[in-house]
Image 1 (cartoon, rainbow, N blue to C red):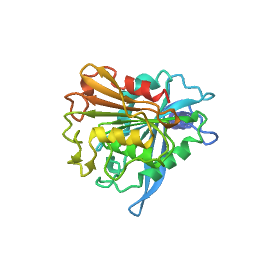
Image 2 (image 1 turned 180 degrees about the horizontal axis):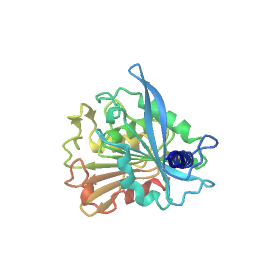
Image 3 (image 1 turned 30 degrees about the horizontal axis):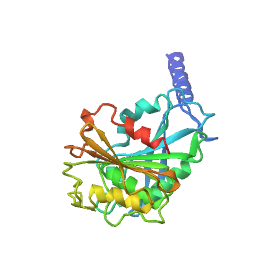
Image 4 (image 1 turned 60 degrees about the vertical axis):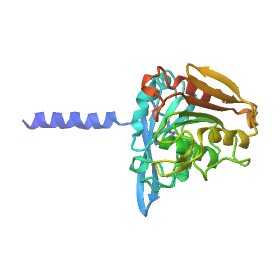
Length: 282
């Protein structure tokens, strides 16, 4: 009986020792990972989770583009695995999925009171320690509350080459200007959005938004883009493309006709395909 117990114990010790991963040396990795950013929020030290989504045939000797994706209010960072796996699995990019404190991003009216710019800068500092990281190919996607945050980060930091702001235009008071580091912007808004009003104004989420059109033009004017857009139609959707912006950037304003806050995403095949095609050009 003692011999059997010792054998089981030895097996368990072996299992524990061999199942973990040691990334303490150079932060190379061969599987999906998680790291934490320590941040003081309201006088409490909080460990904030960031998930890494890696390709199926991840190669630690090469660099990859990085897409940092921000969920909506009340959302979870792990929801991005399903949304973006079609790209990550084949090595198009590595996904980086932060978790909002209290499941939200602080823009002044949310449950969270976290300094999100500090959090983002700490994420970037951590990514710089990974062998796969290419600082010249950093992209951002945000949905709803995360979209408003991606706008803020695009204005107040200089890490992104391009961003996609989905289901939120600019908040009044957070507007780019000629001192903002140029970034390519894909803005997508639903014309019947009852959460973030397409025509602008006070939202039920507690923020005052520019109209979708004025939001796009704010980026255009800040980066001295061509003011006469190229107009494309995607089914019933209108897409306005403003070219010749500073540093070779572009502003793309996609109005999803008759769509609410979900941008008709459940009924759109390969919803994120055009978004990634835009981002990776920059």
